[in-house]
Image 1 (cartoon, rainbow, N blue to C red):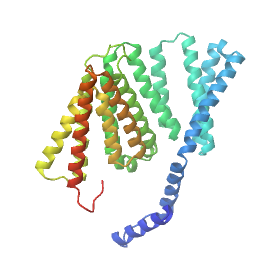
Image 2 (tube, helix red, strand yellow):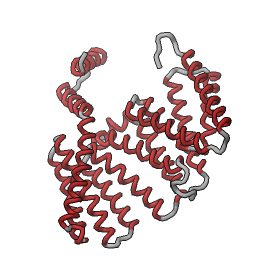
Image 3 (cartoon, rainbow, N blue to C red):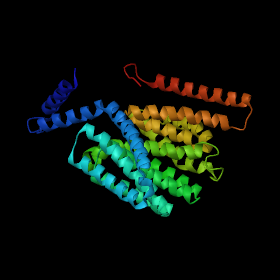
Image 4 (cartoon, rainbow, N blue to C red):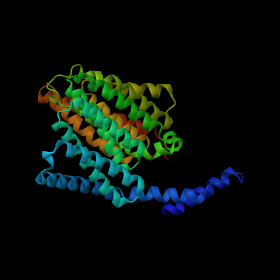
Length: 358
């Protein structure tokens, strides 16, 4: 059954179940569904669009260097502002996939030239970072292009990370991780409300979701990779104060959806999950990656699941490598953890009814 036939069948089923008083705009629904399918089917093209935009940006910046534009500070700033404005304008005026490549490259050129120009003019780096955050927020408010919205989210969160690093307030990374973790969890758990609640938010939902995932992973890298901040980040476990409780909360939601109602079963599940998560207190990146996997699994977001699994494997490996234990002790710890996971899997599998699937 193809997508159009399935949609038609679903609409007919709803019509018969709701009765004759049920009304809906079938044409509008089909048009919107076709548009969404078109967006999904062009993910690969969008990725190529980003790569094409990046290569075009590099080529153009190289040309500008040869042409001597870098000799004019004001010229770079003006050209950057015009490029950003042009990228926003063509996205507002035109809704074509081919425009994405042009807009991405133009926007990237504008941001790059503006950053270099302001740096040459010796503008304070904090002001430049705040300016870029504001520009990205304005971009999100004016247009809802998938690629540029995603880039804007990265610019906003990257700007805050730069402010933390540039001002040597490294421990604020814990607050950054806490805020992004709460925002990401809220976005996932309120997917339906956000999509149907406001047209602007519904268009921004997908790029914001993937943007928050990448932003959280970036923040987790700073507390999960030893030596990035040259040991200036103290109390690494502080980020776990948020990631572990939120992860347990999401597990409770999944357990409820799976029909786990017995108090004894709940106690066993929560106890086992707590015992598994507690050793990761000094590596918040592990519980953070696990949270991304669970949230993505909850809403059937396959890209998020894939990203979370890759991140989880990397952070587990990093955590294992950083342990100040002998190789034998590390092996015993890994073996014990694997046994716990297998026991948890078989326990969960046994609880499922014969006609249920994970």
